[in-house]
Each structure stands twice: as C-alpha cells, then as structure tokens.
Amino acid sequence: MVDTNAIERLIEPSLDALGYRIVRVVLSGSRGTTLQVMAERADDAPMSVEDCALISHSVSALLDVIDPIAGSYRLEISSPGVDRPLLRPADYDRFRGCEAKLELSVPLRGRKRFRGRLLGLSDGAIRLGTEAGEELLPLAAVARANLVFADAAAAAPRPARALRKTSSGRQPRAAPREH
Image 1 (tube, rainbow, N blue to C red):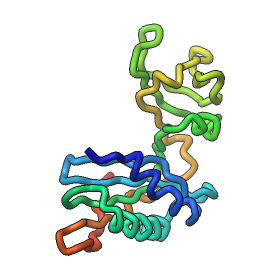
Image 2 (image 1 turned 90 degrees about the vertical axis):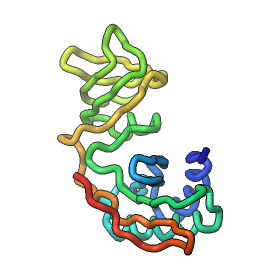
Image 3 (image 1 turned 30 degrees about the vertical axis):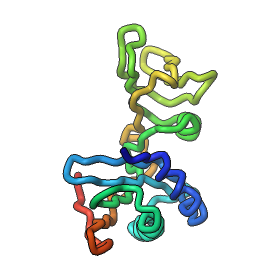
Image 4 (image 1 turned 60 degrees about the vertical axis):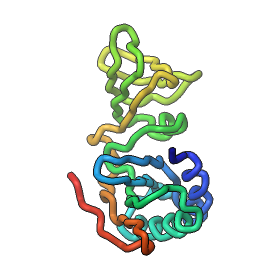
C-alpha cells in the first residue's frame, strides 16, 4: 500500500521552497495508477501551465530517487480549480465569505448536505451561514467540502502535465483535458 502522506512529506519542502503549497496528494487507479498532486501558489496568484510544469519536474525528480510506487503510474499535477476542496482547518477561515458545499459523514438534525457562506471556524465547528440561519457543523464530521464555483476567485488550469513511469524511465506525456 502506498502512503500518500509520506509522499506529501517528501515533496512538501521542495514545493515550499519553490513558492507552492500542497492542497492534496491522491493515488487513484480508475484508468491505470495515477498520483495526483494538487498544489497552489503560496502567494495566492492563479496557477499557470508553467507553474504546473515546474512542480512536475521537481516532484518527478524526487519520486525518481525514492520510487515510492511499485510499477508504472502517471504523475498528474493540478491546481485546485474553481471548486477547490477544503481540506485543512485553516481553509475555513481563509475562505471566509465564500460559498461552500459540505457533506457530513453522519447526519446532523437529519441532514448530511449543507450549502452556505463560510463564516470561519470556531471551537472545532465550521460556521456556515445558510438561508435558514447560521449552522455549526462539527469539523470532525466533514466527509467532503468544496468551494462553490460562483465564488471561486479565478478559474485555474486543469492538469497541465503528466508523466508515465515506464521500465525504461520516465517519458513526458501530455495529460488529457477533462471537463
């Protein structure tokens, strides 16, 4: 089993030195194995194709040395995009005032899905302004949370570059654009 947290710890110092933050690292296998590294600029400027290429080269070099994934895989570098996932507690304060959709792992007063304006984080609960008033949602119960497109600051590029690891090494391969 591949430890994506270990991969994140491995690549984070390099990306931090380049001026980027890791949003998440995910390993999936729907169409072959893909390691997705979602990153954003530390200065909060929009990501460009050049940013994704720089991250790709840095991450690829680190993974070539450590080789944490057995067999071939694709490396996909992407920006969070307009429906950015909210993954860290700080995200709920950082995106205060933005509209978000949240899904809880367990129902709260008979509901699992909520949508509203982020009002921040308070004592382990997400404050969410909804049409019915303010909701306090336990952070520990959040299964999924994303910004809603209407309030996203800027459309970010989709995956800009992918690499396929082969028995002869890595060969550049353009990532398919999916909409």
